[in-house]
Length: 236
Image (tube, rainbow, N blue to C red; front, side, top):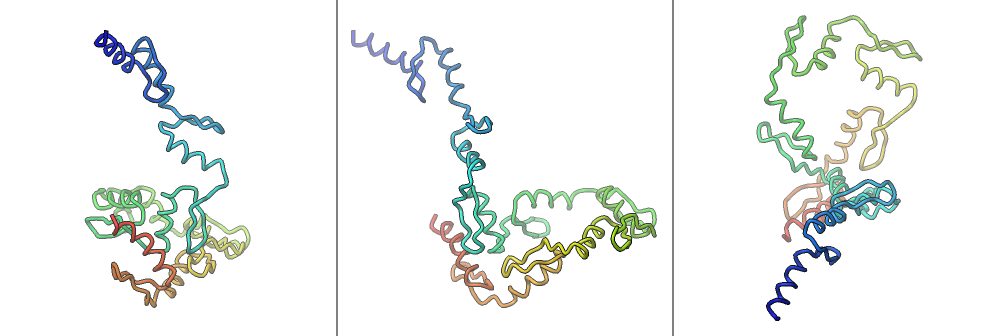
């Protein structure tokens, strides 16, 4: 009787759901039932996710709670992964390096976009100066240099531009728009290049040095943030 009971218990465990302990007469019924546990649905937008962890991360979209606070600029984030990427704005960390030209990037995706530059064949030739380009769109922009045409005109001052980008930048003269802000003093600029030039003034004096990796920073707060990022890696 003992052996028969043990065999019955083993068979029952084989057809029991390990998630909710529900028993089934047949294994095929169990397989069908298990599918109900593999999908986690959002109660708000009904999107389906393969794991509870991913569903919980998604749920933050529907609430105003942003638990991850940047100690330097006070900006808040819903996800820790996005917060970690943001920290590189202050620390200047560029962990992804091209093994061909040693250029470094903050994001892995930016490195992936960069690498093909070293391998793509430059097959689009300018008929005027013989210069080659990797993409046809880049050739089209270049051709405008040789042309007297200025198809992009400012409706306010009637000034003409060969390239759309320069026209869009010019419009800020009239609108007063300054979309580029210094991350240190928050001074706004209409041009990205002007903001970068200004930013260098803050980092000219890098007197705050990390004793762990010898990296220098212009501000003590930046060094403090850098140490918070560096410390967990050293403890592992």
